[in-house]
Amino acid sequence: MRPLPSESRKNRGISLGLLALCLAAARCLQSQGVSLYIPQPTINATVEEDILLSVEYSCHGVPTIEWKYTSNWGAQKIVEWQPGTQANISQSHKDRLCTFDNGSILLFSVSVRDSGYYVITVTERLGRSQFGTIVLHVSEILYEDLHFVAVFLAFLAAVAALLISLMWVCNKCAYKFQRRRHKLKESTTEEMELQGVEC
Ligand SMILES: *[C@@H]1O[C@H](CO)[C@@H](O)[C@H](O)[C@H]1NC(C)=O
Ligand SMILES: *[C@@H]1O[C@H](CO)[C@@H](O)[C@H](O)[C@H]1NC(C)=O
Ligand SMILES: *[C@@H]1O[C@H](CO)[C@@H](O)[C@H](O)[C@H]1NC(C)=O
Image (cartoon, helix red, strand yellow):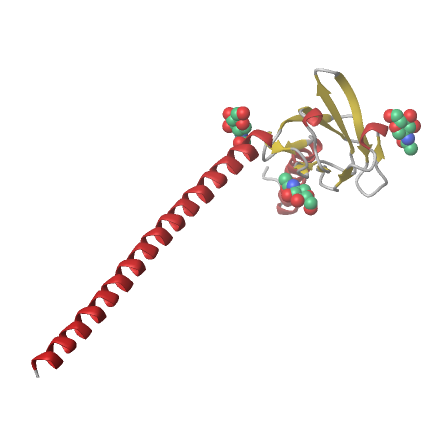
């Protein structure tokens, strides 16, 4: 016996519903992971620059963001916050760090001692977390500065030498010109005198 048309429609409706449920579950699972994007994992800086440790995360709900700093001197937590709330900044970084809602932090006026590894951990409310690392090299600018100054001084010296030789040449020319005019004058007066005698 063939099933009644209304029954087959009902079956189709149930299977469609199941499919939709499966898709929703898959999407839910996918969106539950935390993902973290770090455009620049290595940063070279010079002292006194303001450096943005730029990241972007995506996750379900509002996460907790934490940055740790690791160097030869050890590891320490420097800041922890939830986007939209006040950040808890460690004593060592008070007044020289600010946070952004996308998880990034800005370090003001870095020094050589700020070189090291900055590890960010983004933890979702359900406990899933993701971490990433940014390596910061801060170098002195002293050497490059001196180099620049030396090149600049050499350039100035060259310009000065050129100007001095130019002045010397000009002086010489002017002197010669004057002497020639003087001679010319003398010879014309002599000629005139001679002419006067002839007459
Ligand atoms: C940083 O400096 C190092 C050498 O000190 C170099 O190898 C590296 O390519 C530099 N990275 C960037 C992003 O400029
Ligand atoms: C995060 O936000 C800051 C400030 O708005 C921005 O400068 C930076 O580019 C952002 N980072 C990324 C990876 O989008
Ligand atoms: C801030 O961090 C310190 C140490 O990491 C902790 O003792 C303190 O309770 C935190 N304060 C808040 C308001 O979370």
